[in-house]
Image 1 (cartoon, protein in one colour):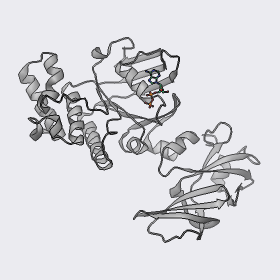
Image 2: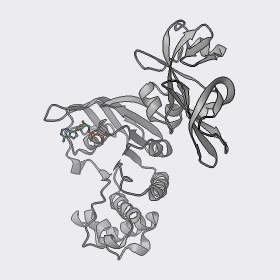
Image 3: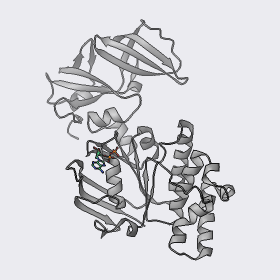
Image 4: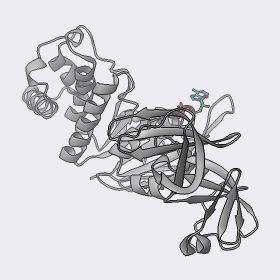
Length: 356
Ligand code: ADP
């Protein structure tokens, strides 16, 4: 059982750089929270404050309701897995996994049981007598996780654990972490700059930019209903297309195109008639249709999908992700429609959700 309450936490480093502003989050027991955002947005700083590796400049941190803001890292009952595995090269895998328990002078029988159980969960049973250098990167990362599991911590913290692995191993190890989470039912916080990892792993995502939380929600909420232009552009690949448009009655008029609004969309845009807004359309929401034309500048067949890059007008680019294998050539005129639109206020960049 482990809940975390992160209450209005700030981090100001000694050089007066404020890395985190008013971070607020209640993590439920057994929840897997993923902190995502571009490099330098404050994810690691936040995780390190939770771990106790950085002082908290302002705010409070509660573990199971108890204030641990000032508690040293070693007394927080949390385990952190880093991107560098930091295994001891001269020790066997068994010894590496047993190390923290040996330090604590646990009973050797208990240590043996815990190491074997963790090795079983992670598929490392046959590797226990090897040295780290005899293991692949993915296996070493599993040993690093094994070292955490044997400690049976209240909270697991992961700081970009997959960054050192190649793309194929990243996918496989990601699925292992998900299985591990299901099996242990443990509270976990996981930091990554990779939106795919966030979407595939998280119970809830915290999307950050420049030290500020931009949105907290399930992967579907962030994908389907992004709170602002930043989240909309960060989550989803290829990224969302953005167009400057003007609301004119029941139409949206942009450079090189004009599309109709459904009654629902018009209702959402109440109060914006005659004003400029930002229209966001995901590549998968651009479909072959008759609403506007684009000159194809590139096309990539991905098997199940075809990515079509086009110019709608001079300086107005769009990327469409069409279903199936399409044969567009550079210079072709393609004809498209939008089947889903996101609207953002031009000044605040916040989503226009109409009364919501
Ligand atoms: P992320 O994990 O999202 O890449 P970090 O939390 O590592 O971001 O960094 C957030 C900001 O804090 C960055 O501007 C970074 O330069 C700054 N920062 C990180 N560590 C320190 C430090 N020890 N001293 C001063 N500034 C730091």
